Image (cartoon, rainbow, N blue to C red):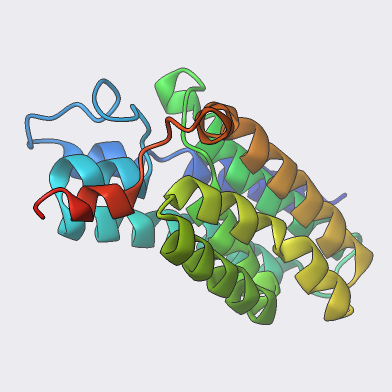
Length: 205
């Protein structure tokens, strides 16, 4: 693998590790790592600081998944082991978000960053994932369930679109890691203690 590819993989990790949720919350007086779900992602930022910062965090986390692999694709296209290197850049970006060196390797769950990666690699499959996410959240009220089912939909989506095996392997790794990072949510879903957005809306009645 050429040296430029190794540099791009390292750079992808470092970009993915930028905790935008924490950065955007600075000055608010709220430490998102100590309140709510204590997660640095958009859902917790939205819950604690409102929709504006929640949406900005979401867009930033998607962008940091998209841009490194987009740049790697432009630089490495047609080169030796290009697909392997591009796939590793995507994996490194998601890994950076989940295990950021800047925060002692305690980061987010990788859904938005993974979305950004595949927004570049397989935008049609992303549309399927978003549809599954929206339907799951709409019917259940659980963002976590939508994230789990939406991310899992990426694998059959890539398969039916006849995408190359390296993208399937990358998606499988990302999905497995997302599910592992959601282990607490899975436990709460099974025990019936997960927070529902539907219940939140029904409180004023």
